[in-house]
Length: 425
Ligand code: EPZ
Image 1 (tube, protein in one colour):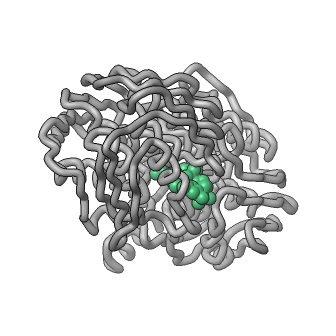
Image 2: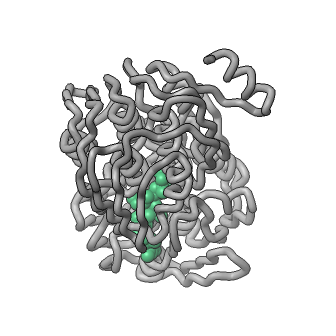
């Protein structure tokens, strides 16, 4: 990309990846057709849809963002596919298969290396419902003669465990209560999706979720909520380039912690029913960030906001309280001239005047997006490699950035890179 110019225009936000991943697994819980709209066309969701097919479900893509699924013909509850190891959300098949078949065999999750990512709270929930769960040859193997509702208090607020236990509990006998539940927008979306299939889930979005088991779930048509993190990433793009960008098809309430921080650093925020306009300010002010479960500042926005603060006029403190290794990208930012000191899960960010362009590598999904923002802020030509991480969670990222004026292209060879440089001069 060639950076250094303000991004201006409107960008349409896609469906939420982290809602879509749970919803895709949740289609296993009925024998009837499920039509899902606003499905983001990203590699993580496409891998999950592929895994559904391998389980025996029929998956028919109506268009790039609409898919019809029927899981009637799922014949077995074992997925032993290396393909699935690559993504974190493979664990959602455990809850869904336990809920439907009372058994599951699923590889332990892969995903971004942003820290140790245990699933002990998921397993705690499955065991409370009556499943026996073992780890055998790198897979989670679960079996339940019956599933009976129970009270489960999560030791840690966990998005994945909350969604997984919901799926295992919706067809269980009796009532399940999940205490210390995650409250993210995609938790509410998952509960709304399951309720649209006839489940009985109350309290999603609060820290106590009550589920009354039902005997069966029916088909549904469901549209996924907009992606809070994709929207926040484009809002940061406006801020870091001193631009003027309107993100469309968002739910402003979901964006509150991000909007508040962008105002603190000097941006002007205009909220509409389903859009937010961000007008950047060339003088970025420092501020402090602590990532927290929703409605706190999201950990998935930490690399993006830290990159913005690296260009502020002072010193900021960023505390990453969710994951234990989510500052790996700082080394790459340093190569662009950033001045950031990381001690454990705290980063002290001393703002610099500008970034210098460089060849950098995306270490994971959200850090990759943040490094693209850094390249768009820096003058000159920056190359970000390993962009398949970014393509896991951002639909047509470079096209959407081009749509607001970025000079950016995906190049697959040195020759294509040289052609791009010639073109942009
Ligand atoms: C989901 O991961 C998201 N991924 C992550 O987004 C997101 O960062 C995270 O929630 C927090 O919001 C998907 O939804 C696919 P957690 P998840 O369980 O469910 C610990 C992205 O960029 N924990 O809420 O894995 C865990 O180690 C990705 O889109 C346990 O100790 O996150 C972490 O420290 C990155 N035991 C904390 O809890 C468990 O059993 C929160 O994890 C589960 C989690």
